[in-house]
Amino acid sequence: MDVVTIIVGLLIVVGLVGIVLPVLPGSWLIGAALLVWAVATAHPAAWLVAGVAWLLLAAGWSATYLLAGRRVAASGVPRPSLVVATLAGIAGFFVIPVIGFLVAFPAALFAMEYRRLHDAAAAWDSAWTAIRANALGMVIELGLALLATGTWLVAVLLGVHP
Image 1 (cartoon, rainbow, N blue to C red):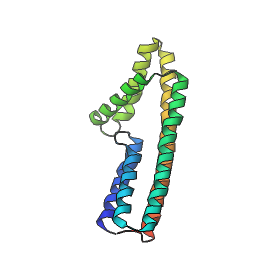
Image 2: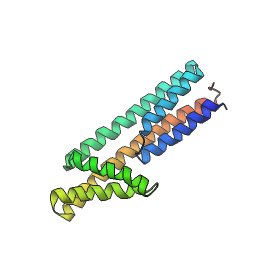
Image 3: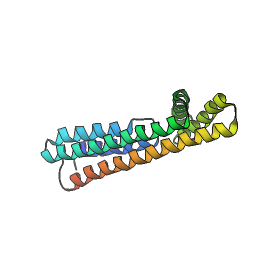
């Protein structure tokens, strides 16, 4: 295996982590890594693999935003609550490494919803609906990113590399 393939593999792993802990744009990072791999490989099969992977990644990314967006909008959670919760999650990731996002995002979302609704039970229901919708979107995006990764891995194992 060559250096380009190893670096692309590492970038794909970082991208997969970025989907679960949304500090990095995971699907985009995976897609960019596969594009670099296809360019470096300069093989028609590599371009086919990259194209299929990009379709899977685009479907996962779109499903995340469409599905989660619709469910969150239907629950009535306003966009500013999600923005503040996401920013708090990103800050939390650096304050409490690895799990900080998982602690700060729901806490901030609950706080924003409590501030808006002035009722702890209603705020929890609203926040929990948004968390479930985002989690479902993340699982779909991760599943399709893993399929894209598997497509690339099969190609590499079959000998398509620089």
